[in-house]
Structure formats: C-alpha cells, structure tokens
Amino acid sequence: MRITVLSGGVGGARFTRGLLAHLATVPGDHEVTVVANTGDDMWLHGVRICPDLDTLMYTLGGAVHEGQGWGRDGESTRVAQDLAGYGLGWDFFTLGDLDLATHLARTELLRRGLGLAEVTRRLAARWDLDRHAGLPQGSVRLLPATESEVETHVVTEEGTIHFEEWWVRHRAALPALGFEQVGVAQARPAPGVLEALGGCGVVMLPPSNPVVSIGTILGIPGIRDAVRATSARVVGISPIVGGAPVRGMADACLRAIGVEATASAVARHYGWRDEGGILDAWALDAVDASQARGLRGPSHHVASFDTMMVDVSATARIAQRTLTLAKESA
Ligand code: GDP
Ligand code: CA
Image (tube, rainbow, N blue to C red; front, top):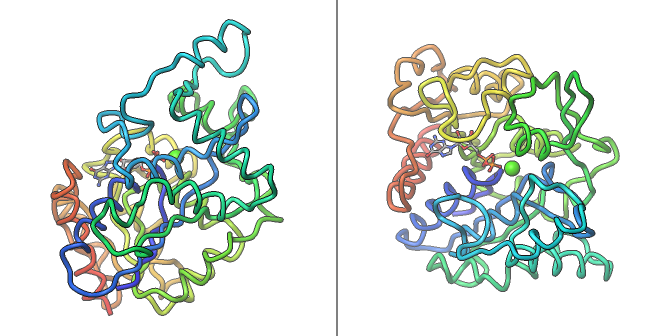
C-alpha cells in the first residue's frame, strides 16, 4: 500500500503513528509519505524551528512527551531559563534543551546549503521511524510541504502576528480576522511532494487542524491541484467531535474563516472532489453520526465510528477503518 498523509502536529502525528502500527500487521510492502505543515515554522534565537515536523519526528520515533503530545520526553529547560536572563526572545515559547539540539542540527544543515527536505531526511534518520514502527527500511518518509519559508501570520485588530504568538501566547483568544501565508505566491512544493500525491493509492487527511495545518499545506501552489488530480482515493477524518476540537483551538481558526465547528461543516469546507473540492470520503466520530446523512451521496462516502485516539492500538483501529472507507469509495 502506498499512502500519503497531509499532517499538522499532534493530531496528525498521533494518527500517523496508529496508521503505521496498523500497517505493521498487514502483509506486503507499504510506503507512507507524511507531508508536514511548515506554516508554523519560525526563526527564534537564531535557530529554525519546525514545530509540526518535530512533533511528527518525535512521535513516530518514540521520543515524544506523551502527555503533552509535542516536545521531547524527559525534557528540561535550562537554556530557556538562562536565555531569559538576557531578556531575549519570546518568553511564552519554551525551547526545551533536547529540542534545541534538533533546532541547532537543522539550522547547521540549512546553513550548509541543504534544502529542508534533505535536512528533514537526515534528522529523521536518527530516529529510525521505519524500525520504530516495525516496518522495513524505507517504508516511512517525512517531507516538509515546502522548502520555502512560508509562515502563517494571523491578522488581529491589534496587528498581524506570527501564528505561534497567537496560538501559544494568546491561546487563540484574540479574535482572528484572517490568516496570511507570507510569501506563498513564490513557494513550490518540496521535492517529492507532488510525486507522493500522484503516485499513491490513498491520500489521508488525518484529524489535523483544517485551517492552519491542512489548509496551509493545500495553500502551497500546486498541492491542492495535485490532490484534486490524483488517481488515489482522498479520505479525511474529522478533528471536530461533538461540535468542538478534541484538543487545541481549531474552532477559533474555523470561526476566523467563517466555517462552523462541526464535523459536517469541515467536510463541506474541504468539499467533495466531484464538486470542485478534494474529498472522496469522510469519517466522522460516532457521536456525530447524525450528520452523515446530510453529507452522503453516490460519490460522497461517509462513515462514522469512534475516532478518539486514546492510545496506539485504538488509533490503529481508526486508521484501519479509514482505509476501509477509502477502499469502499473506489
Ligand atoms: P497541531 O499542529 O499540534 O495543532 O496539530 P494538528 O493540526 O495535527 O491537529 C490538531 C487537531 O487534532 C485538533 O483540531 C484536535 O481536535 C484534533 N484531535 C486531537 N486528538 C484527536 C482525537 O483523538 N480524535 C480526533 N477525531 N481528533 C483529534
Ligand atoms: Ca501545528
């Protein structure tokens, strides 16, 4: 099976970990390419930080802080505390000491002239994502959506700020008037992204933020068209359950673009492929089963089941049911 996942941070990483756990039980060769959102990336204290790529790498590599969902397990913050003594940087955005090693390594490789895709490959090699998932070498690939620096900025009444400042400092409580992908017009998909979308059997939109994670990936020129044009089945899983995000503030992002925080509104926001959108199939949580009827159509496949990613085995079952739904939509 060849699968391409368009992923944000915590939701996408947890889903992908479950998907790999499921595939490890299915005989045959599997190739999973994870295309990560890079809109949250930023320069801070002289280093390049890629929050969603890092969350994916740590989660799939078995190094994530499980309770938090991001950052390294067993982390400390001595450097950040000491930096505060210089009155520098963003005091609300904590850089862990171990995490900082990742950012230093990334920045060093970027400064040697490597593109972010190759840098990501080298960083991920250390974490042995294939072996960690119990899959043969070369089964799992992590790619940035783009190698260009296209950062998401949030327009508010108090000015335009970086996404991470809005999300972490303001907890998304400062009303967002809109989102900007700064420099997006010149950006291109990273090497391998379009090939991964065109050459797979299933494209998955995990329960990631539809606006500032998946929406940002789709906004890179060429990516939405590649999803629309692929011969693969495109299936998504709702990050909104019972009218609210399972974690985080995706509802504030949806509000900013005028989309209701419901599983069906998110599906309509992505749109069905035969109506100019990107989806062939949509999975929503069992608690939202009543919304399925209004979405279904001859080429609009909808299923409802438990989508709470409480642990790896529950998430593996979610991935399995999502793959089954994708097959049924073929
Ligand atoms: P971020 O970059 O860390 O914000 O993470 P993502 O964009 O990948 O995903 C965040 C989304 O995942 C949020 O909107 C959550 O509601 C959703 N999410 C988190 N855990 C679960 C879960 O167990 N089930 C479902 N259906 N969605 C979840
Ligand atoms: Ca993110």
